[in-house]
Image 1: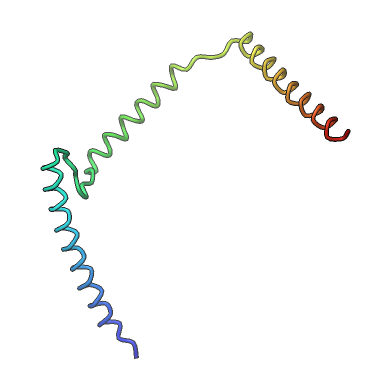
Image 2 (image 1 turned 90 degrees about the vertical axis):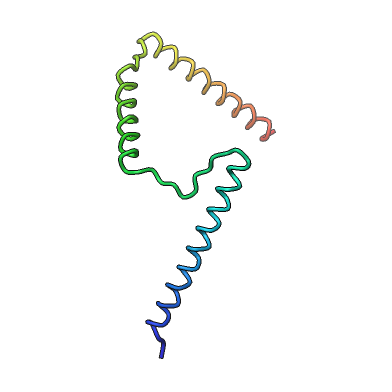
Length: 104
C-alpha cells in the first residue's frame, strides 16, 4: 500500500534542500553582480505599501489624462470619413481589376 506520510516527508525534505540551494545561488549571484557593478535584487518583492502607492499614482495619472482629451471638430470628422471612403474605393477598384484580370 502507498505510504502518503513518507512521501510527504520526502517531498518536504527535497523542498528544503532546493530552497537552501536557491539561497546559496542567490548569494553567489549577488556577489557576482557587485563585482560586475550592477545591483541585482534577487527575489525582492515590493512591499504592499509600495504597490499601493504605485497603483494610486497610476490611477491619478489616468484620471488626469482623460480630462485633457480634446474633441474632433465636425469638419475634422468629415475629413476623416471622406478620406476613409476614398481609401475603400481604391481597395474595391483594385479588387475589381484583379477579378477581371483573373477571369480573362
